[in-house]
Length: 625
Image 1 (tube, helix red, strand yellow):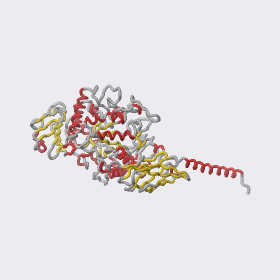
Image 2 (cartoon, one colour; image 1 turned 180 degrees about the horizontal axis):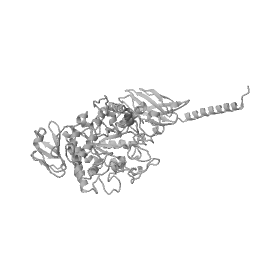
Image 3 (cartoon, helix red, strand yellow; image 1 turned 60 degrees about the vertical axis):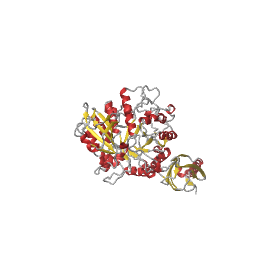
Image 4 (tube, one colour; image 1 turned 180 degrees about the vertical axis):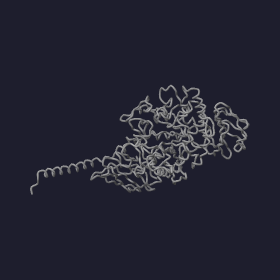
């Protein structure tokens, strides 16, 4: 039978196409292109013997994978929607030894090997100690704290360059700048540093803050390198400082490499058009909330350039858990702070926290829960007996209700529920928390107005907030620059996160040396330093119980005490009038004590019935038997 010309042409075309595809496949196999393997390495002797290894490269799913290493098994090779990904699940037996694990990839007759290092652990998970009520965190934003290495201000190929004149631009602060000022932090009396995220944020704009991560395994090159970060932690430890890493699970930057080439559709929450979260945390606690409101809270995006990650995806969930364990182990960290704790799916957060605490039983993790009601905030702390049975597994939460109460108490006149009464009633709800002493407490931070702004730069009020913060129950966090009354409104983050004076060459004012500070700024800095260094050695503050008395006649009094020791704190909230203490009212907590010494002035009060407190002052007294 005669074959029509058109069919002959089609057959020839098909043959050429088949040959081309085979040739392309052969060409691909000649150069199996593995672009990423994460984590970067792992350790033998971990409590969880199972490890996910993410492999990324063009059409890597075509490869057959094998490994041969004593006491290590390749249990699963997972392909997903995107052919550029493989997820390898490896089982590392307890008797496996450190060394190079060869992972072989084969396409057709062509093979390539990627060596994956298994390291020996420096110490067991139980040996990791974390932050406690004995600590005070110094919160700093690396881009705005100090520029120690000007050579990394501008990195070729990165999306946002250096522009110190732009409040929302990159200002050049870096890891070397933090290193250069560790002695200042230590000498001030702080015992730990919480650093806003240092991971790569290669976004076109507003990437200075660190919360739009584009690589979970790489320190941003404008801050330094992974090794620089590791060295920073080592230096902190040498100086007796702990390091808390800022972690983001809810979202990442839209320029993240796995967002630009999604492994699966459900790696992130997707909508027909951009949909923002409603930011209503209470919907997760409210037994009567609509499912639509709850879904929008956790599935909506935080911002247009921050895709919302879905931790319910098994492979992403495992990836993020391992990433945080990797950083703890690699850098020998002392704690984690979880950004926007309620925004990821809450069951995933519990799974994440449980996995980390299983590996590091003595670790502490604080979750950011930005709400002004203790009933809502406490829902997210480990051990809370919630109506729906939920347990977050998160040991600590941020005490926003107390932060707002501190500012309100100092700014407002005393009334039935205002002024110092607001502080009293907030603390009166401590039964809501499973462990209020593990709450991270603060007066301001990188998201809300600085206390100097709240108090219209009134240093007396700033001193009051400092005294309260360092003596109330909980773990204090102090925002960089508060010690010199730096200003910054919460509705303008660029100004809120201003540069620390003295962190840049040529600064006329230097907070680190007190050069150029006003008398009031120097006074507040010295006051803060004195209280902090006293707090370092105060057993009642570290380990004591908390007892408060109802405010009376503008006096609010509370005690931190153990069986033998006691600290008495007296707040005179009257704007102009000195107040005399009625010792009889506090007899139940003063029993057995005969005198007192002021922490800030060394003044001795030989008679506890003759204590006078100046207007707008918080007096801290070490009681003596």
